[in-house]
Length: 408
Image (cartoon, rainbow, N blue to C red; front, side, top):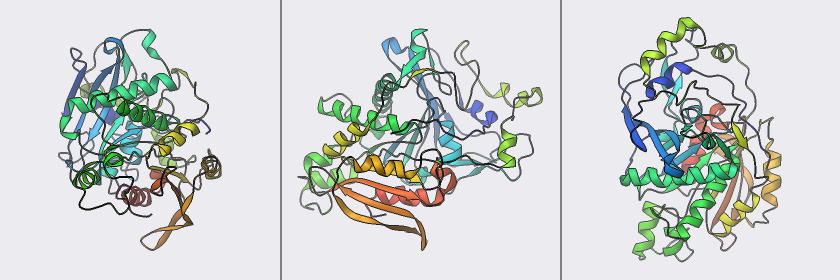
């Protein structure tokens, strides 16, 4: 599985600074964001930002953006979104890919950019956490010198600890189905975190992260479960043995408007948008970057194919998708490593549709230990390396169907 950084190169610094309020006296701190510069009126959704301390003495402070589902936050799944890089902020997913906001590119003139609602946000169907990981990404930082060093392995353990502590701090989401998702380089990290969670649940780590209960209670039958099995039906409704490890791909995009945003807020004339909007603990994050290319990071894992195999063998579902115009990691490479898993095809390669139009092609594989769902692979027609950025409507339809146990 190839490793690559996201090819997206444009940033808006002004908006991200307003969402941060830090209380350095607590390992876990959060604040509710009700308004943002550039957005007309109050935000029509519940948004929270904050830190969770992980590692020895909470030396690593991981920053997150959390947005509640606008449909039904009590019942809808909880998605942890990991952006690629490594070193690209969760802010990318929040405003450029699957979050509830997007920029008004057409009216951008070099001043404060306007924010618009994203009609194809995944928060229409799910609660979402956008995480700045590994440490050194976005607003995440270390209290110690040694903590700034990270790797695939160390980042995985930190993210696992993060989601445990976040759920303990947000108990009302403790029974929601949990999915680990991401794009680009996170195609490496997502299955590693997923496997860490699976192992932790087997070891009865607390809190129990709810993506295995259906496997335990439904007797391996998930497509047509016994409706008289109350435990099984409750698990199907609340959670499942599921976890999405979404892996997407994409290509460079050229646009005069996007090119202008490279220098947005770098000049002194734009600083007035920045400093009044942020309260920072001295010495934590000196300069925010959408993608930090100077991380002390070791890519110490060469392949996660075995992780995928263990997850599917353990009864978990997975959705892997690639933009068919991805010039960075062509979808043919993805199909190659999936074939090495030697899974049984239960829904042959075929087109899938959105509003009567071909949106891509898909194939579905059985679980290794049963005939139930295992892995779904889909291409997104016209999608690049970060497919939702290019084909938001199609990607939302795809993910919504998969989360609902429907065929694509």
